[in-house]
Amino acid sequence: MKKLFFSFLNFFKKKKEFSLGLYGPPNAGKSTLANTIIKDILGEDAKTTFSTSEVEHETRSVQKVEELTLERGSKKINFALVDTPGIATKIDFEDFVKKGMKKQDAKERAREATQGVIESIRWVEKVDCVLVVLDATINPYSQVNITLIGNLVAKDKKIIIVANKIDLKNASVDKIKLVFPDYPLVGVSAVTGENLEELYKEVFKQLN
Amino acid sequence: MDVKIISNSIISSMDSTKKIDKIYKMVKDGSLVILEGRLTNEEELALTSKSLKHVNETFSGIDIAFLNVKHNSSFFDRLRFKLATFLLKYEVGITVIGPSKKVKELKMNPEQIEILLFNQ
Image (cartoon, rainbow over all chains, first blue to last red; front, top):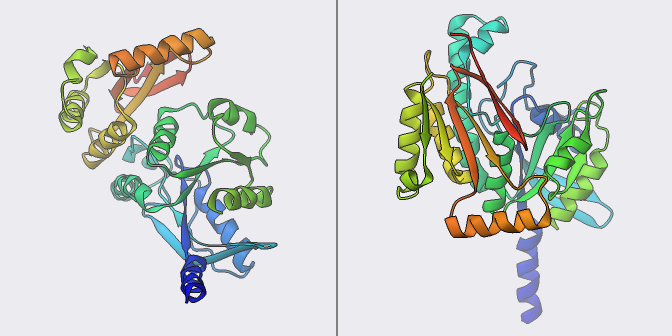
């Protein structure tokens, strides 16, 4: 009877789906990384769900792909990948106008982007583990990054810092390590898929 | 530009909502706020959310930066800092918060904050 009870518990334990969130400032490559992970798991033909752009705030609402399974050797995790709008403290429609958008479209994009940031902040509660995606070509010492990571720590979330864009010449993983020395950090290229295996190893470590 | 320097003793007696409302109002009115100490992470995010909710053509949110004393300091300095934080009940340092239509950038590094303003 006891054995049956534990098998019953294990059945549900195995079914547990973790929620893996991608957070970070705008244009750090969160959606590109999400697409690369999905293609890596589901195959090259998998539909890439997340739209990407060089113009900031392309992702303006939280998006989720469920029922993903990562399997390496005897290790296996089921997870949902949650892509979130970039966290920012300011959004000016004029910045979009400067990038060539019409004034009315720029205003609408700014409105959606502000709602997206607020939604991102609220969604922190719902994720189990967070990939904090930072652009390794940009100085990581910003109040937004410090506050975001501090907030995740306060909420007892598991964190992996992802130094993205290591394929670019001026990328520096060490600079990010210097600013955030207390957290696991992996340098990756979301565009080329470089070092994705290292990232998975860290995800296994955090979620198992 | 109007600069308001606020002592921690003024806001430490307020609850988070009142504190955020007070800072938000000053920044929305165009002031640069220099605050003794630091808001909590939750308060900073709540201030960000509140500001973003009110973004329009004349207000595009805030710029925020915190300068503390613990970086690159010796073991004893860090110990003193922890003791001071414990006794004062707030993180020793200063927070700069400004309206991003007026503040072009708050350049942060562990030693200083550089406030770059737009030409008015």
